[in-house]
Length: 265
Image (cartoon, rainbow, N blue to C red):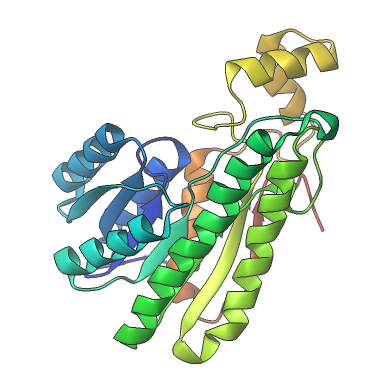
């Protein structure tokens, strides 16, 4: 199965590094022009330059706070001005940090909701408006998490957003099916490489909780996965590429777990 996105344009939020960078590179390798969106413009520019050099496609770096409507609208305007169209949006940008409920403050709750939930909504709204105008359909992929189907201790605010983006994608799938716009979610398992959650501080905290050494945490969690390994950014990117492709033209509203069978249902 040869997945191709020639002459199409994809916007990937949070793609200056981490999982988003791998998603962007994977789409570019299949011929898509890329809009690299990140609050870190230096990282976005570096990713864009690498993509243009390695894959002979166009790339545009945009510094965007996706919780700000005006910045999101401008992002889509710039994408259309450079490439003439938008075809794919991957809502990947997000925040993640542990907070127990009794320690939750407005200052800890609101940024998570603003970026992970409101930001995904604003990006989808701006892109779907453009897709409807263009009249040839498109694909929206929300990056959720296995925490979008199973609550996690200390991450209720994060889980709220990851449950939420699944519901939004399903709702958009129903609202814009007549326009040929497909909306799905990808739910990664534990991603230790390039993850905002699995940083040194969080791993140290989990090690203490589990009674193991920090260097043993990944092996502990891998042992809980039927396929006996953690999820990689490339695993996530492969799922995104498929759902955004013509090969998935009859798939919409799905929530695809990419977790090695951990949340099998």
